[in-house]
Image (cartoon, rainbow, N blue to C red; front, side, top):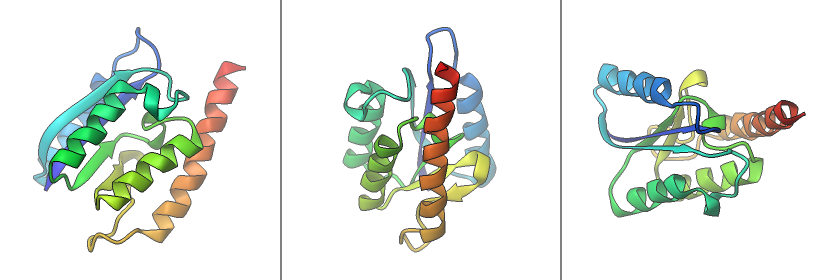
Length: 138
């Protein structure tokens, strides 16, 4: 199983080492092959087109056969509901599952079909991530 790890923090003084280390440990435990790690220090509220490393990850996935993208939590993918859902839709179209560690959910079933229950949960979690950002800013 070929995996890409994605980590994000919002500010330059934060680091994403914990995210990468936790996801790497999961991959080792499950015998998954980590093909690449993409990390960025940028607000999750930015539009996808403004996020260089997110776009680098998407380009990488399109060029190679990747089975899963791992994030520690959905808010690492972003804090804007629409932007998050656009990334997931693109992953789904490429038959790449998004694995969200803190809830142990994936966007695709083992047969590569969309997991309807996880899609429902992700929509709710994406909106919670957006609301958390609003609360943090206030």
